[in-house]
Length: 152
Image (cartoon, rainbow, N blue to C red; front, side):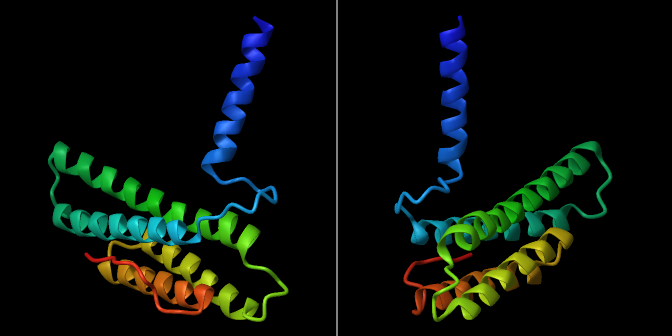
């Protein structure tokens, strides 16, 4: 029984660490994937804002339920973007000795602020500003224009 408990705890601990990427010097990073995930989250935020606006003023139980679900989804995806910036890029990838440190840091901060603004608002312009800041961060981080598709 104790062996089973110990192996279960270890399995859950490693699963949690793996899902957030490790913060040990493993050297295995998927920067491109992180940018694509942030853009997917932004796309979800944009869709949620559109749906929230279409449900505004409706008071039937189903519409209220759907509006709450869209707000929750919007906030969850904005938080995911903030967590990616903080736990992945700022904690692991943006190095203080990098000559572009300031530029990368400012661009990353702008993404976090725009994610916060998207949480606070149902205005689709906040999702658009978030998308633009993710692309600007990519350009500051990679030193080149984004080389992947993202449309909505």
